[in-house]
Picture 1 (cartoon, rainbow, N blue to C red):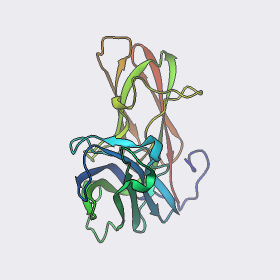
Picture 2: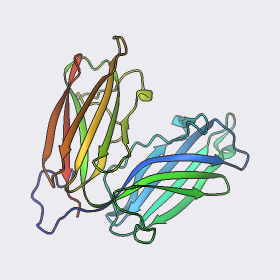
Picture 3: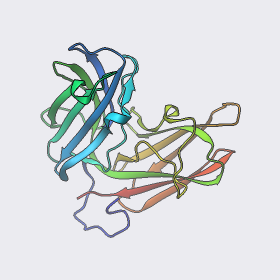
Length: 267
């Protein structure tokens, strides 16, 4: 959002970005057994900022349980900004499995690994999801991502304007032309949505990349916590812009939600 509300130089243009859709444990070795109580980090480093841009970050006391090979996707809660792909992107993985008993020194490694992604060298076709397997002696993990050739950053905010926030919801975002969802919030995240003191729904992820001349499609399924579990389905399409904001509303019957997209170019 750094350039949403201020004039940008004329040489700022949509640039190559990397969008992650999922990170999944495909296979475990080294004596590991399901379920896995996972903690640690998955992060990227790019030319925009050499600091880690976390995709997954979970401490030992709040580990995520992966129940089986059919339920083994990490709960991605970031990135905090778009991942720039002008130069190769480094992906770092440092994940451990918490033991049922004992101190941290007895925890086992799930994956300690890093790889560099260069869309030119990997011959990734822009605008299509790519599945990449990365193996270590402890596990094999699948990373699903896409290269967007000329993209802008979109930061999504959902606010409760009227009515009760006592509902469950699933929010997804996708860009026109890429048949893969970015999961912003899921039914599994709680018995009802969490709303902060300012009235905004707390999302898993807020930042997505969108083709500079493309469209962002935001979809929502919601059920009233005290109702009959009939899902209300809404969809809104936003045309990408280089700066400024786009706004729309979802009328759910039991509440009214404000949807705001903050657009930004990255240098």
